[in-house]
Image 1 (tube, rainbow, N blue to C red):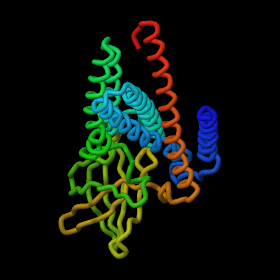
Image 2 (cartoon, one colour; image 1 turned 30 degrees about the vertical axis):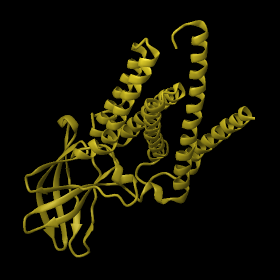
Image 3 (spheres, helix red, strand yellow; image 1 turned 90 degrees about the vertical axis):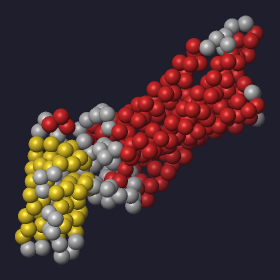
Image 4 (tube, helix red, strand yellow; image 1 turned 60 degrees about the horizontal axis):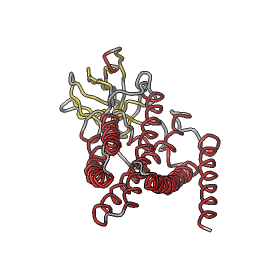
Length: 321
């Protein structure tokens, strides 16, 4: 009976994810200004979420092993860590594809890219540790301790470290409804960073109620410089002109102006409305989260079954598990 339920569940997960993929490419509307590039968020964000879930499950079962010493808890901890590593790699790859389309570069050691790379190295070291230890009991105990320490670093590397840096390619504020980019306050002649672009405020001009900022934008590695002129209406307190960054599909917006000090607030703006404001897109996004979560638990149980079989065969044959 359990085997039949498992097969039905596997089939349902497969159909569910296939439906998500079809909806992602054929049903979800294009994101204004980004076109088909916006669709990858429906896969990128859920895989990142599942990686956090998987590492959390791994830490829980590692703690249970240290408490009760049951081999099956170690199996679950290992299987969850392996799944977390896989989903983290998928999130990284999809993020690189999106970065190339929108920002013009696959990898630029952006703070979030760097922190996720460090996280992958930390869990890769866990697998190396397990393979290096011959004694089964010692391998399980040390792996459980290491897994708990690795889990402690995970929230810092994923949620905290990327937000400590002033420069990031990760467009959280462009896609999550209600979130805000902080932007950069600049005076005339001052330099700042938006994304991986260096910006410098060259001057401010006013014609009636409209104020225009002259901003020099430098590409990564100083490969080119461009003059952009975002503008702001003092009467309506709204941005008027939002020129696109050269080679990108994001815009430079002039959010605030202080004529007394000649300072402005410049920010990256996403073209169009929020990606998840469309109901079809939102439902597809939620379905993708549910589908990848179900896929993780199916992979987890399958891997645990294989590990238990491997352990039983090792005990019979007298070989290392």
